[in-house]
Length: 220
Ligand SMILES: *Cc1c(COP(=O)(O)O)cnc(C)c1O
Figure 1: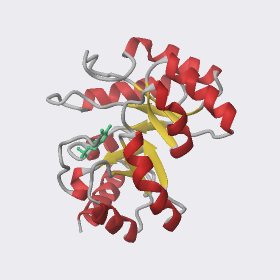
Figure 2: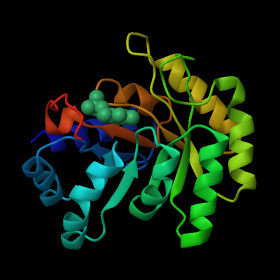
Figure 3: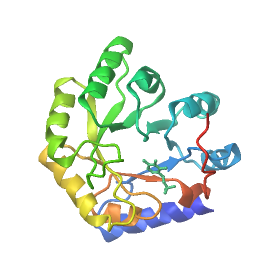
């Protein structure tokens, strides 16, 4: 099955980079995927999943979590501030933190709920106008702000531009994290996770290579 293949490729990429086995966490990106495919992955022991939409995740995951309580859920899509509370209540990690207002909202909700999801600061490494993420030049300030707010800061996240060599983007993200004393690097998707692992990824977000193509429509 595809999941076994991806696991083997992750192990091989870890070894090729001289990194210990298990140093990379596979986030299986289950957004928009049919339930039977996600349940097949759960049956095969996959326990870390990524979702992009708060409402979709709220619909799907409570029942699965009742059956597989050790599942960890990562929010990997852009997060609207008005969904911050729902996201904190549902997710173990939030990867799309890209502005101070959202960081402040998350900190307030964390304080009110006593929940402390891991936070990854999303960096727009290609400075693409249409893409989420803090600009590289502003990343240090946002990371510092997250620290001061007491967020459970885990690392940095990026999505390289579509038609570019991803490697310099992964390198820029690693430099940003290292400079700020952060060890988590959420980078690499179906097409480029091996390159990301070579550049130090600690979390790869792989969807279609595990589950097959997604329906393109966003759910309502
Ligand atoms: C959808 C998505 C992925 C998974 O993409 P694939 O190409 O299917 O592996 C990874 N990261 C983010 C942020 C996504 O939105």
